[in-house]
Every structure is written in C-alpha cells, then in structure tokens.
Image: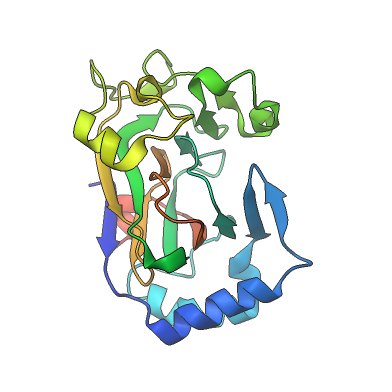
Length: 225
C-alpha cells in the first residue's frame, strides 16, 4: 500500500492553534500558483512543538525533513508529483481547516513516476495558458507520458471523476490512465503517502481550505507505521 489515512489524529485545540499561527504570518506568506504558502513549517519551532509528539506515533520524526509548506487555497490543484533528487521520501498531509466544514477530498493515484530528478505537474489543455508552472516542470497529459508508470488502458472511473476531480479546467482526459482513491480531507486526519505517486486536490466544494504538508526522507513502506 502506498498510502495510509488515520482519522481524528489531531484534536481541535491543536488545529485552532495551527490555523491561528498561520493567519498571523502575513509577512511570511507568499503566493505560488494561487496558493498562499508559509514555507518550511517543520523548522518553525511553534509548529513542530504542536505536531511532533503526535506524528512520532506514526513514523520516526528524526528523519530528515526536506521541506514543504502550510497553505491556503481556493482552487483544486492539478495532478502532480513531488518527488525529486531527495527521493525516496514520503508526504505527510494534515488538513487543518475547511471553510464552512464542507466535505472535501484529496486524491492519491496508483500511478507513479519513474524519474525522481524533478517534480511534475500535468495541466493538459491548459499547458500554453499557465507559463508560471514552468518551475514545476509542467507536462501535458498523463496517458501518453513516458514518465508515468502503471497507467491503465482507459479513462478514469466516471463516478470518481464526477465526485472528486471535475472542474471547468480539469477535463476528463487530464485523468486518462489514472486510477486511485479520493480520501477525506478532514481537519484532524493524517494522510501519508509515497512521494513518487501522483496526487491532487479534489473538486472544491468550499471557498477555501488550509492544510499542512511535509516531506521526510525515507522509504514509505519501511518508515510509516
């Protein structure tokens, strides 16, 4: 299994403290592709003190942290992969707050990349319209991309697409060749997965949401309990 989800790992008091801290950091937050990001949160002492004792129950938190961010955004991100020259590594995702407590999903796919030198973001028909993704190694379609392994021979499941992926700019052909799961992006849950696997935001049913994303060095199957 390349992912694990644990429910109700973080209590409401911890979530409130994390969100309050994020909202206070106006000078440290910058915008990248529509996401309001606070970079490198593991190296912020107040954040580490709030989450490290809990995370230590699920993996060795003394492993090397290789970055990521605390973020707020209002649009669903494209399918992408975070692996790079630091691979093997794994992602830790902590949903912190969802506007109006709407139901939200986070999507983890069975497909993965075979080159760990750079990240990748698949943008399909939007390729020529979003040059700012160049730094993220933007790519077109997954189904004909030799970078991607374990592709299916057909379209994404229609029900899953309608329920979790569809947006005005994310058409069904963007997800051709993919299979996977849409897990709950629910505040307090803990989502962990192998960084080489493609993943993306589910369709947005809310105005915005806040999450905390971390990456640690190590083989997912060996390190995550």
